[in-house]
Image (cartoon, rainbow, N blue to C red):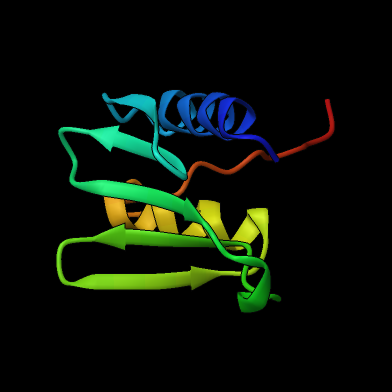
Length: 91
C-alpha cells in the first residue's frame, strides 16, 4: 500500500469513526496531524510487520490492515462508548 493510499484509507476511517483530524503524507508513511500519531512502513527485514504505529513513548507493530485500523481506533479513542451495530429484523 502506497503512502497516498494509506492516507486516504485512514482519512476515511477517521470520518467513519467521527474523529476530527487530518492525515498527511510524512517521510516513510503518514501522520495524523495534531494527534501525535505516525504510521511508518516497516523495513523488509522486519517482516511480517507491515507498519509501525508510533505515538510519544510507544511504537506498536501492525501486521495487517485490520490490525493497523484496530490499533489506530484505540489510539484515537474511537473504540470507547457503545459500539454501533447493524441489526436485521423481520418486517
